[in-house]
Image (cartoon, rainbow, N blue to C red; front, side, top):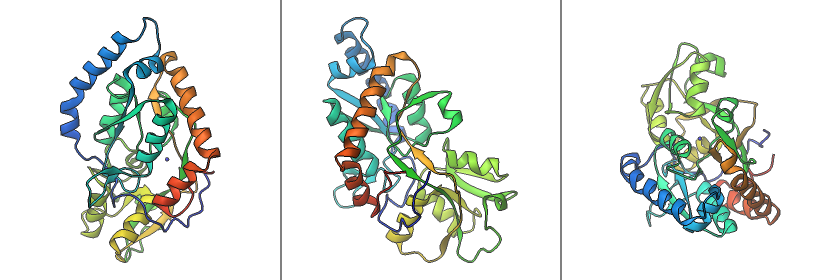
Length: 285
Protein backbone atom coordinates (compact mmCIF):
# COMPACT_ATOMS: atom_id res chain seq x y z
CA UNK A 1 0.00 0.00 0.00
CA UNK A 2 1.79 5.23 3.62
CA UNK A 3 4.25 13.16 7.06
CA UNK A 4 3.73 16.33 5.61
CA UNK A 5 2.66 16.44 1.95
CA UNK A 6 1.01 19.52 0.48
CA UNK A 7 -2.47 18.43 -0.37
CA UNK A 8 -2.37 19.98 -3.79
CA UNK A 9 -1.91 16.68 -5.45
CA UNK A 10 -4.36 17.28 -8.24
CA UNK A 11 -2.11 15.67 -10.73
CA UNK A 12 -1.93 12.60 -12.74
CA UNK A 13 -1.59 9.45 -10.69
CA UNK A 14 -2.06 5.77 -10.95
CA UNK A 15 -4.55 3.74 -12.82
CA UNK A 16 -7.66 4.89 -11.11
CA UNK A 17 -6.82 1.95 -9.02
CA UNK A 18 -5.34 0.49 -5.95
CA UNK A 19 -5.03 -3.23 -6.14
CA UNK A 20 -4.25 -6.60 -7.39
CA UNK A 21 -3.89 -7.39 -11.05
CA UNK A 22 -2.94 -10.97 -11.86
CA UNK A 23 -2.63 -12.55 -8.48
CA UNK A 24 -3.67 -15.95 -9.77
CA UNK A 25 -1.18 -15.91 -12.62
CA UNK A 26 1.64 -14.76 -10.40
CA UNK A 27 0.82 -17.23 -7.69
CA UNK A 28 1.13 -19.88 -10.36
CA UNK A 29 4.62 -18.56 -11.05
CA UNK A 30 5.65 -18.66 -7.40
CA UNK A 31 7.13 -22.19 -7.52
CA UNK A 32 9.27 -21.21 -10.50
CA UNK A 33 10.39 -18.10 -8.66
CA UNK A 34 11.30 -20.21 -5.66
CA UNK A 35 13.30 -22.49 -7.95
CA UNK A 36 15.08 -19.45 -9.39
CA UNK A 37 15.89 -18.25 -5.88
CA UNK A 38 17.28 -21.66 -4.95
CA UNK A 39 19.37 -21.73 -8.12
CA UNK A 40 20.75 -18.27 -7.34
CA UNK A 41 21.58 -19.39 -3.81
CA UNK A 42 23.41 -22.39 -5.21
CA UNK A 43 25.45 -20.14 -7.52
CA UNK A 44 26.36 -17.68 -4.75
CA UNK A 45 29.33 -18.61 -2.54
CA UNK A 46 28.37 -20.40 0.64
CA UNK A 47 27.63 -18.06 3.49
CA UNK A 48 26.79 -15.09 1.27
CA UNK A 49 23.82 -12.94 2.23
CA UNK A 50 20.71 -11.93 0.29
CA UNK A 51 22.40 -9.07 -1.58
CA UNK A 52 25.15 -11.40 -2.76
CA UNK A 53 22.58 -13.93 -3.98
CA UNK A 54 20.71 -11.21 -5.86
CA UNK A 55 23.92 -10.07 -7.55
CA UNK A 56 24.77 -13.66 -8.42
CA UNK A 57 21.33 -14.07 -10.03
CA UNK A 58 21.72 -10.75 -11.85
CA UNK A 59 18.18 -9.69 -10.98
CA UNK A 60 16.01 -8.57 -8.09
CA UNK A 61 12.45 -9.92 -7.95
CA UNK A 62 9.96 -7.16 -7.13
CA UNK A 63 6.34 -7.76 -6.10
CA UNK A 64 3.83 -5.17 -7.29
CA UNK A 65 0.09 -5.08 -7.96
CA UNK A 66 -0.02 -3.55 -11.42
CA UNK A 67 -3.50 -2.14 -10.80
CA UNK A 68 -2.95 0.85 -8.51
CA UNK A 69 -2.43 3.97 -10.57
CA UNK A 70 -0.39 5.96 -10.64
CA UNK A 71 1.93 3.86 -8.48
CA UNK A 72 1.82 0.60 -10.42
CA UNK A 73 -0.45 -0.04 -13.43
CA UNK A 74 -0.59 -0.86 -17.14
CA UNK A 75 -0.43 1.74 -19.88
CA UNK A 76 -3.76 1.65 -21.74
CA UNK A 77 -2.07 1.83 -25.14
CA UNK A 78 0.95 -0.43 -24.77
CA UNK A 79 -0.16 -2.55 -21.79
CA UNK A 80 3.33 -1.95 -20.39
CA UNK A 81 3.72 -2.07 -16.62
CA UNK A 82 4.36 1.54 -15.58
CA UNK A 83 3.95 3.84 -12.60
CA UNK A 84 5.77 5.77 -9.91
CA UNK A 85 6.76 2.71 -7.89
CA UNK A 86 7.70 0.78 -11.02
CA UNK A 87 10.14 3.48 -12.14
CA UNK A 88 11.55 4.02 -8.65
CA UNK A 89 12.12 0.28 -8.18
CA UNK A 90 13.71 -0.03 -11.62
CA UNK A 91 16.04 2.88 -10.79
CA UNK A 92 17.02 1.20 -7.51
CA UNK A 93 17.74 -2.06 -9.36
CA UNK A 94 19.95 -0.17 -11.78
CA UNK A 95 21.87 1.33 -8.86
CA UNK A 96 22.35 -2.20 -7.50
CA UNK A 97 23.64 -3.31 -10.89
CA UNK A 98 20.92 -5.91 -11.51
CA UNK A 99 17.77 -6.34 -13.60
CA UNK A 100 14.38 -5.41 -12.14
CA UNK A 101 12.15 -8.49 -12.43
CA UNK A 102 8.56 -7.43 -11.65
CA UNK A 103 5.95 -9.95 -10.56
CA UNK A 104 2.32 -8.83 -10.36
CA UNK A 105 0.41 -10.13 -7.37
CA UNK A 106 -2.31 -9.07 -4.94
CA UNK A 107 -1.18 -6.65 -2.23
CA UNK A 108 -1.34 -9.10 0.67
CA UNK A 109 0.22 -11.80 -1.51
CA UNK A 110 3.15 -9.51 -2.27
CA UNK A 111 3.83 -8.89 1.40
CA UNK A 112 3.56 -12.58 2.20
CA UNK A 113 5.91 -13.37 -0.68
CA UNK A 114 8.54 -11.01 0.72
CA UNK A 115 8.32 -12.84 4.05
CA UNK A 116 8.64 -16.31 2.48
CA UNK A 117 11.40 -15.32 0.07
CA UNK A 118 9.33 -15.70 -3.09
CA UNK A 119 10.08 -12.02 -3.79
CA UNK A 120 13.21 -10.08 -2.87
CA UNK A 121 11.28 -6.87 -2.19
CA UNK A 122 7.96 -5.12 -2.81
CA UNK A 123 7.33 -1.75 -4.47
CA UNK A 124 3.68 -0.82 -4.16
CA UNK A 125 3.20 2.23 -1.98
CA UNK A 126 3.73 0.09 1.11
CA UNK A 127 3.38 2.38 4.08
CA UNK A 128 5.44 2.00 7.21
CA UNK A 129 3.41 1.06 10.30
CA UNK A 130 4.34 -0.19 13.76
CA UNK A 131 2.58 -3.49 13.09
CA UNK A 132 4.48 -4.05 9.86
CA UNK A 133 7.77 -3.21 11.53
CA UNK A 134 7.30 -6.36 13.60
CA UNK A 135 7.41 -8.45 10.42
CA UNK A 136 9.53 -6.44 7.99
CA UNK A 137 12.70 -4.39 7.99
CA UNK A 138 11.90 -1.22 6.05
CA UNK A 139 14.22 0.90 3.98
CA UNK A 140 14.24 4.67 4.30
CA UNK A 141 11.08 6.33 2.98
CA UNK A 142 11.14 7.40 -0.66
CA UNK A 143 7.74 9.15 -0.78
CA UNK A 144 5.10 10.70 1.49
CA UNK A 145 1.31 10.89 1.31
CA UNK A 146 -1.88 11.18 3.35
CA UNK A 147 -4.81 8.82 3.80
CA UNK A 148 -8.22 10.23 2.86
CA UNK A 149 -11.86 9.21 3.11
CA UNK A 150 -13.73 9.33 -0.21
CA UNK A 151 -17.53 9.49 -0.28
CA UNK A 152 -20.28 10.53 -2.63
CA UNK A 153 -20.21 14.28 -3.20
CA UNK A 154 -23.78 14.38 -1.92
CA UNK A 155 -22.88 12.69 1.38
CA UNK A 156 -22.88 15.18 4.24
CA UNK A 157 -22.90 12.61 7.05
CA UNK A 158 -19.24 11.62 6.84
CA UNK A 159 -16.81 14.47 7.50
CA UNK A 160 -14.16 12.69 9.57
CA UNK A 161 -12.62 9.25 10.03
CA UNK A 162 -14.64 8.85 13.26
CA UNK A 163 -17.84 9.18 11.23
CA UNK A 164 -17.02 5.80 9.63
CA UNK A 165 -18.19 4.10 12.83
CA UNK A 166 -21.10 1.84 11.90
CA UNK A 167 -20.61 2.54 8.16
CA UNK A 168 -19.26 0.39 5.34
CA UNK A 169 -16.03 0.88 3.39
CA UNK A 170 -14.18 -0.93 0.59
CA UNK A 171 -10.42 -1.48 0.50
CA UNK A 172 -7.66 -3.85 -0.59
CA UNK A 173 -7.13 -6.86 1.66
CA UNK A 174 -4.11 -6.46 3.89
CA UNK A 175 -3.81 -2.72 3.29
CA UNK A 176 -3.41 -0.19 6.07
CA UNK A 177 -6.57 1.43 4.72
CA UNK A 178 -8.50 -1.73 5.52
CA UNK A 179 -7.03 -1.62 9.04
CA UNK A 180 -7.93 2.07 9.42
CA UNK A 181 -11.52 1.37 8.44
CA UNK A 182 -11.83 -1.36 11.04
CA UNK A 183 -10.13 0.78 13.68
CA UNK A 184 -12.76 3.46 13.14
CA UNK A 185 -15.63 0.98 13.45
CA UNK A 186 -16.44 0.40 9.79
CA UNK A 187 -17.42 -2.88 8.18
CA UNK A 188 -14.85 -3.38 5.43
CA UNK A 189 -15.38 -5.12 2.09
CA UNK A 190 -12.20 -6.34 0.40
CA UNK A 191 -11.77 -5.65 -3.31
CA UNK A 192 -8.89 -5.93 -5.75
CA UNK A 193 -8.59 -2.53 -7.40
CA UNK A 194 -8.97 1.17 -6.70
CA UNK A 195 -11.50 1.37 -9.51
CA UNK A 196 -13.64 -1.24 -7.78
CA UNK A 197 -13.56 0.65 -4.48
CA UNK A 198 -14.71 3.83 -6.21
CA UNK A 199 -17.44 1.98 -8.09
CA UNK A 200 -18.79 0.54 -4.85
CA UNK A 201 -18.97 4.03 -3.40
CA UNK A 202 -20.59 5.41 -6.55
CA UNK A 203 -23.33 2.78 -6.66
CA UNK A 204 -24.03 3.01 -2.94
CA UNK A 205 -22.86 -0.50 -2.07
CA UNK A 206 -20.52 1.01 0.55
CA UNK A 207 -20.50 4.40 2.24
CA UNK A 208 -16.85 5.24 1.65
CA UNK A 209 -13.34 4.12 0.85
CA UNK A 210 -10.08 5.02 2.55
CA UNK A 211 -7.20 5.47 0.16
CA UNK A 212 -4.10 7.50 -0.62
CA UNK A 213 -4.84 11.11 -1.46
CA UNK A 214 -2.58 10.80 -4.49
CA UNK A 215 -4.57 7.86 -5.85
CA UNK A 216 -7.92 9.52 -5.12
CA UNK A 217 -6.90 12.72 -6.90
CA UNK A 218 -5.61 10.72 -9.86
CA UNK A 219 -8.93 8.88 -10.08
CA UNK A 220 -10.86 12.16 -10.00
CA UNK A 221 -8.62 13.67 -12.68
CA UNK A 222 -8.49 10.71 -15.04
CA UNK A 223 -12.21 9.88 -14.86
CA UNK A 224 -13.47 13.46 -14.59
CA UNK A 225 -16.03 12.37 -12.00
CA UNK A 226 -17.74 15.03 -9.92
CA UNK A 227 -19.84 12.52 -8.02
CA UNK A 228 -17.12 11.78 -5.46
CA UNK A 229 -15.19 13.92 -2.99
CA UNK A 230 -12.52 13.76 -0.31
CA UNK A 231 -14.59 13.96 2.86
CA UNK A 232 -11.72 13.78 5.37
CA UNK A 233 -7.93 13.80 5.41
CA UNK A 234 -5.69 12.11 7.94
CA UNK A 235 -3.21 14.71 9.27
CA UNK A 236 -0.63 11.98 9.85
CA UNK A 237 1.89 11.60 7.04
CA UNK A 238 2.07 8.25 5.28
CA UNK A 239 5.63 7.13 4.58
CA UNK A 240 6.18 4.80 1.62
CA UNK A 241 9.18 2.48 1.90
CA UNK A 242 10.37 -0.92 0.71
CA UNK A 243 9.68 -3.88 3.01
CA UNK A 244 12.31 -6.60 3.30
CA UNK A 245 12.16 -9.84 5.23
CA UNK A 246 13.42 -9.33 8.78
CA UNK A 247 16.88 -10.51 9.70
CA UNK A 248 20.61 -9.96 9.29
CA UNK A 249 20.46 -11.66 5.88
CA UNK A 250 18.99 -8.42 4.51
CA UNK A 251 21.20 -5.91 6.34
CA UNK A 252 23.52 -5.23 3.40
CA UNK A 253 20.61 -5.22 0.91
CA UNK A 254 18.74 -2.65 2.99
CA UNK A 255 21.90 -0.55 3.27
CA UNK A 256 22.43 -0.62 -0.51
CA UNK A 257 18.79 0.25 -1.23
CA UNK A 258 18.99 3.14 1.24
CA UNK A 259 22.12 4.33 -0.54
CA UNK A 260 20.33 4.09 -3.90
CA UNK A 261 17.33 6.05 -2.60
CA UNK A 262 19.62 8.77 -1.23
CA UNK A 263 21.45 9.04 -4.55
CA UNK A 264 18.22 9.13 -6.57
CA UNK A 265 16.93 11.89 -4.30
CA UNK A 266 20.13 13.97 -4.49
CA UNK A 267 20.27 13.53 -8.27
CA UNK A 268 16.69 14.81 -8.57
CA UNK A 269 15.53 11.52 -10.09
CA UNK A 270 12.91 10.82 -7.42
CA UNK A 271 11.45 14.29 -7.91
CA UNK A 272 11.44 13.82 -11.68
CA UNK A 273 9.57 10.52 -11.47
CA UNK A 274 7.12 11.95 -8.93
CA UNK A 275 6.29 14.98 -11.04
CA UNK A 276 5.80 12.73 -14.06
CA UNK A 277 3.10 10.70 -12.34
CA UNK A 278 1.66 13.08 -9.74
CA UNK A 279 2.32 16.53 -11.11
CA UNK A 280 3.93 17.29 -7.78
CA UNK A 281 6.92 16.20 -5.71
CA UNK A 282 5.84 13.73 -3.03
CA UNK A 283 9.37 12.52 -2.35
CA UNK A 284 10.27 15.15 0.24
CA UNK A 285 8.76 15.29 3.70
